[in-house]
Image (cartoon, rainbow, N blue to C red; front, side):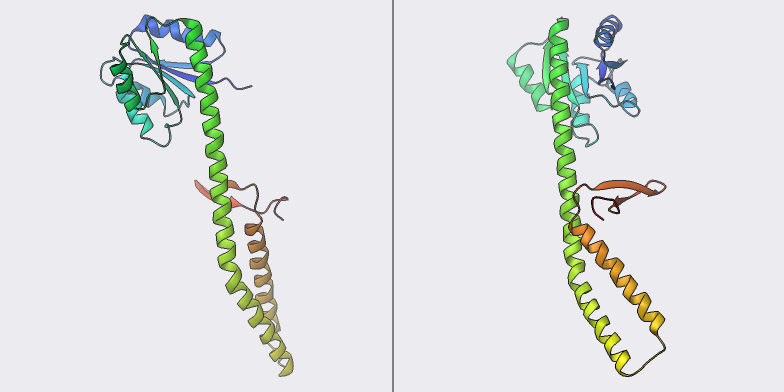
Length: 223
C-alpha cells in the first residue's frame, strides 16, 4: 500500500529534522524543506496530501505559500496546516483568510500533530473523490450533449441515404454501388459512436499522440 505523502516546510533545521523523523516513524513518506520558495520547487516532483508549514520563514513564509497554493488548481486540495507560536484569535482569522485549513501551536505535541495529519489525509481523499466524481459527471454530460447534437443530423442523413438507394435501384443505376457501400458504412460508424456517447457510464481519458488526450469510449461497458 502506498504511503501518504507529507511536506514539511520549516526553517529551523532541528525542528524540521524532528518532525520528519516522527512522521516517517508513523509510516508517512516525507519531504522537508526550509521555506516557501524551496517548497514550490519540491512540489514540482512531490505530491503531498498534507503540508505542514511554519508561519514565520525567510524569503516566503507559511501564509504566503498557502495563498499561492490555494490559488493554484494543481495544489488547492492539499490540506494545509500552519505551525505558529501565535495563538490569538486575530492571527487564526488571518490564517484562515489566506486559506489555511488548520493550525498547530508550537511547541507541537506529536500525537496531536499525527491526529491532525490523519484528519487532513481523510479530508484530502474525500475532496479528491468528489472532484473525480464531478469530472466524470461533466464528461458524461458533455458526451450525451454531443451525442444528441449529432443524432438529429444523422437521422436526416440516414433517411436521405435510404431515399438515394431506392432511387438508384429504380433508375437501375449500377455504377456508384461502391460509393453507396462506403457511405452506409460511415453512417453506421457514426450511429454506433452516437450510441456509445449517449450511453457512456465510466469515461476514461487516454493518451493517443504524445501528450494529447482523448475520451476512450470503445470499451466493453459501452460497446
